[in-house]
Length: 284
Ligand code: SF4
Image (tube, rainbow, N blue to C red):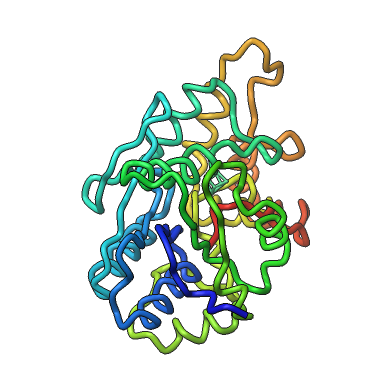
């Protein structure tokens, strides 16, 4: 097998701000003596709904590993801007702008948020450097079967000129390897690591997270539900009869907020304690 970390042309490391993609970055840095090859760029696409700890973690990786990380954000009109730790949105502004522009909400079938807020904005940055064709390295592990199957079935992800690769998966890296690395590192992402899963990662109450997880996150900090409930309440598209919800198979965020305030974790167990999250690009 060819070296999965071998970089032969313009390459983008898709950095989600989670432990796995940071571990991938670390392995790449080690493979190249601490400095990435020319035309290899680390890009973090901020949705504005990430936990503050994630933003601090991205900054720490940047500073402590001395590797430039480009922070990008969506802006209306399918545009993008470059931000940094200080100027990054923290109140869901890029995500809300996208919803306003579409006037409907993303859902498990139409996951346009991951495409518009992340995949295309990362591509925008590479295009701005003059690259129409480039590889994207994604932090996927060998034990993320569904996400891996999706990536291997469609390496371009529907975006012309892109070939996505998952070097950690190619090397057989599992969540145990990633957890082991962070256990021995002297700093870490300041979000709970639950058996290799960071349930607080990505957008805080992402509609692809299992309902029990969302309920638990709301119970932990009820204010997390406010933005999501406001988005659901605000869709005025006349073609959408139910007013717009992120999920048609679950209570609304406002209802979940009311339930969790009334009976803490009872909802989570009653709802679907065994439900898996839905695989998407956003990743760990
Ligand atoms: S984490 Fe979830 S809500 Fe956020 S961009 Fe990805 S799919 Fe959309």
